[in-house]
Length: 301
Image (tube, rainbow, N blue to C red; front, side, top):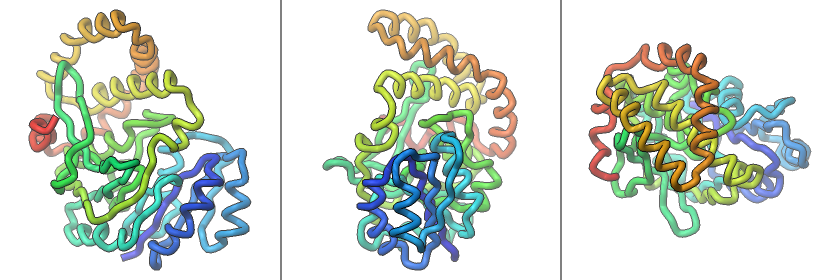
């Protein structure tokens, strides 16, 4: 089984210099690809001069995380692709447990356990509440998960291509991995959480929080939460609940002066034509109902 490790990067020269030796050590014979998202630091020269064994793909313009991952997958030769953030560092014996699950042809993706300043994460759970899909970090003592993180996860390339990969609707960041995972589950494929495949991933030190303000990040997160629901949810009861609860959410946001909520909503409205175009693609492989996808997780949140 051929493996490709894809590392999207933007201005991460210092972190790359620290983490890449460990990635190479733990990669065994896997292909390693760094997709540089038009960095303005010395990331490109670092790869060329210090890590010539790594395949470097350089983008001329900055188009965000999802586009970088999609490009890396396109350039890869592996049957299994592993997405690894430039600030994520794999621990010893990380690869074999991750890959073992792909013996089952129905497995689309496998997530890693992420160690983040004493917090163990990597497994996701969610439930429909007050007209939203509300998601959170799940306990790491189980093997099912609602999504596999784009920051540290393995994906079957053939199914990635079938499902269309990360949707650029969510650019510049957030929800693209939840969206792809949800579509895979709805199509009847399996996601697995593997607690023996550990990576160190300090989210607060990542590129998003280093280069964007908290207000902007919150705005994008709200916008993409709307977009996810409008694009993926097809259950009439859930759609009705979404719109019935909308006045409550607007009033609550106004009372707490949560202006990014309103900005996010209007940003999402601007993308409605794209949502309608993508909705048909998102549901063409659907085998399960929305409540069936969420059922294994709803009691955990």
